[in-house]
Length: 239
Image (cartoon, rainbow, N blue to C red):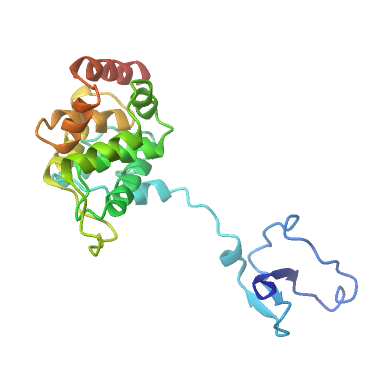
């Protein structure tokens, strides 16, 4: 374990070589860009200079936009800034909320956990609940719909995948799941309101796909048109 423990030492100058104290990692602040940071291992005597940007990467303000740009759509022309409502970020891709982006990422992960070849509407549902912090997730849990129940119903409906099958890193969307995403965007456009496309839009998009696995699983767990209307009202109130 000692080989993995590194001490962070600033490179000494001629004037400070004998007096500069060693700072602990808890008190170390990112150095200026024109300085390097020296790493010294307890087992390796050779000092290694590392650029500070590698140790203290600066958070990107555009990271959300770059992630959301990978959300697939069957209608690429929607990327036009004139057609989509904006959340004020000034980027043509910053239309989905961060929670929706995270839910989409969790959906891909759930599909991989179940070893499914594609990300379906059932995986999108699980993604919303695994992300867990959105009003949509809270609404589902308040109505007795949990991620554990979703997984159980998914296996009942779709079965288990071959144990030797491995899903791709980013399982592509099924056709119903793609239509659900496009429905969410369409509904936001129809509203004519500014703001983000949220997990609530996504859930209602899944519910609109009557023959999809996600719709059937929601129905089996007690979700119905009345609850969908409640969720739609929640969108209007929070917008």
